[in-house]
Length: 424
Image 1 (tube, rainbow, N blue to C red):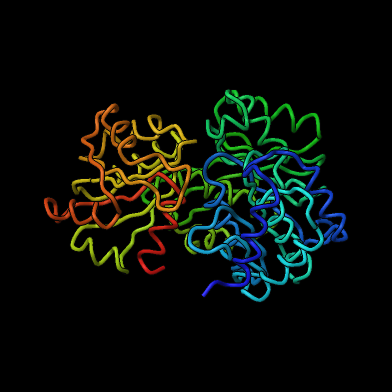
Image 2 (spheres, rainbow, N blue to C red):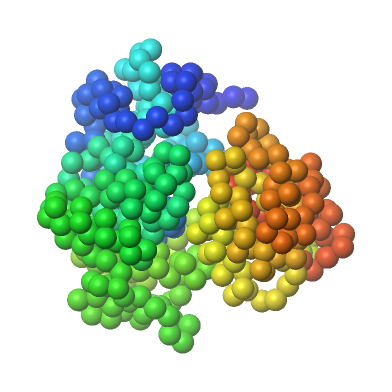
């Protein structure tokens, strides 16, 4: 049975011919028609960056919730259900609440052009404004400067996670151009936490912050994070914290944890909140170990993992994470969109994986055909094959390597399909 919210979401897809059209004019128009809910939100933490936005948000949320705070959170894209994008005071939005707020936005917009992301972002802001909470976490969808979330005049804190090459067709071809778009969330006088950056990106961020009088709290300057004896060590001007390693896997999560802790410290949260930020978050499809479910059972006794990273920096982070796990033959199942740098993503993985089985992403018009993904994998030195489904790929791998570590990767859209197929 189709949910009522799905019917409204389907109608919203028809309001603008482009999936992405970066401008804020349509958003401002609809917000005004709804009496500007963006001005009635609990204190906002606004998060931009190329990689690590979602993980950093999940850590900040875990830390804030440890204090007993009610936390709104907005993220995109969703994996299995649209409701995942909107958390109201800690809980996923209900079907009734989502249907009601989407319908109000649809009626207020009328037939005027507006993109799907824009109108659903406005719906989230409206739901946040009308539900009591202590904090609002907003994750940028794409870029920052012209993103539909960039309508908060005075957030409590802004956060910029590592900036790298991705979405060049929308954000620019160089790190400086992309950093300028990401730094568009910086607001006059508002502190900005900055994760580790390439020098070119940091120069742009620092220049924009200086012009706006926004105090920077940057990795390697105002805060430091490292590991020592299987512990996370964080230090800033308030002192040193000795914490457990992050529950989210991968060496890159150390830096994400550092940005989350720096944000919590700016919000005057205590060590218990910082501890919860690293030990309590759950963020699906980011090097997630699938231990139960239909696909996990099919793979057994092989080890099944899922990751939605999809750009060259994510490929490097994933390769580093796989190297840290106990030794097993690594076999990839990969599907990607045609907007991504497939060679850049796969090149670092070629050094750690024994094979790649390519799949097309079901139901995605922009999927790279499995045969093309396999050809791209062969170009970077991977032994590659194609399969008509994830299930077929798992069955083939386990038939020859029952003790494999199987990683399904390449796209959040593929990850969402896998979560649904696995029974999530």
